[in-house]
Image 1 (cartoon, rainbow over the protein chains, first blue to last red):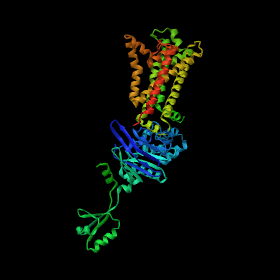
Image 2: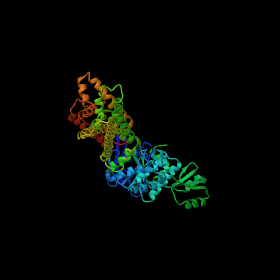
Image 3: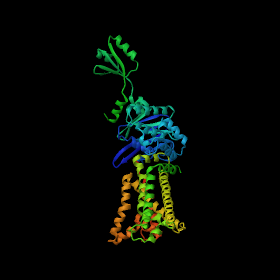
Image 4: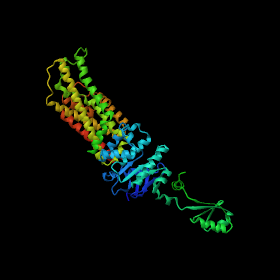
Length: 286
Length: 271
């Protein structure tokens, strides 16, 4: 495991912003940290980076305590938007960051190339578009080839094209074997990119598994006439209005059974809950 | 070292650094030499200063006093603004977050900021000395005065200048960390350096304990040290305490401001 937390908790007064969160991120995976705004994602990430001290519980990042130089030097992060000096160029901002991380200029150029910012690297940061700023943030996170990349809402504020670019970038990094912890409230983004997902709601981790496991088994929807006869013929089916739901993968066998019994089969299709439905169910959001 | 290098790089390329240093150099030249020179050559009101006093103030051998006398108030205010902006702006820009997740310990990150600010302030004092020396030599040559370079005593004045500058830097850093932003830090700092202590001195003429207190406040201590090493004729320069006492108070303020700011930086959550 690259990241583990055990009952990690942060309280402000009586309010638990993060409440006994126990999660784990494995090496080489893209882990989606999913939750509505204000669910506790950023606070959890800030605790993993040592910016916020936990009230109780423990966390380990690459086998080290969060916030220690040993841990931080192996982690690249972008939290709630990039923080750079507006009067410096993109390249100079990276040079400043590289000096702090103890890496050389070659890393700066490589990172700029990786996020496709070489052409704009001498422009002042304040003149960058939001998308360019986010990409520079990722470039800074990539300095020193970290073992773990933590990206907190990296597509926030981006237009659709910028969001697609950022997703492509994360996918490309994942393809190179980079471990990524990606926090987001955008379900499509997480569904598209992530191998495993942790869902946080009101400070509590309500689920942690692969996207497929979260979405559950595929159910077959069958529309037939007469539906009552089909319901009797197919064991374990449930009637939902004028359609049946069946936990069964062999659609061919089901259709043959119905046709042999003189049931008119009008529609058979797999029915699966979307991540959005699962998410709303778990978080109570709508 | 990486933290100092990073901070130096960004302070060096920060327009505000050079604007503030530039403003200070223009001020010290204007009030230290230009106005005195004009007064000497046809001015009708020389603020009760005799011609000999004006000449003495502009002599190259007295350049140490010229450097130190501006720092207790206006020079100090400029240094405080620089430090408060350098530290406070990082909260608004989100650069503290980037800094503290880059790798160094918080103490090292803070030491980097303090170290780089220290280098900039040493540069500011050195530039003030060079510019003042250049101005004084130019005037002395133009006027045909007998002049000599400053003696070893200039190091005492420069040391005092650095200590005063360090105190204002620490004050600015402290305010930047406490207020977590540049605007309030600069506002409070300027208010203190230029208004509050002067008001207290006014009240001090009516209330003895307040008068005693004003002598050892940050600006008061700085003014007393400047006065003890020969600085005179500038706002904020005092002669109520010995140089040693004033210096000890200033060291105490440096330790307090830097220590408190570092402790806060290390212990406080960055949200």
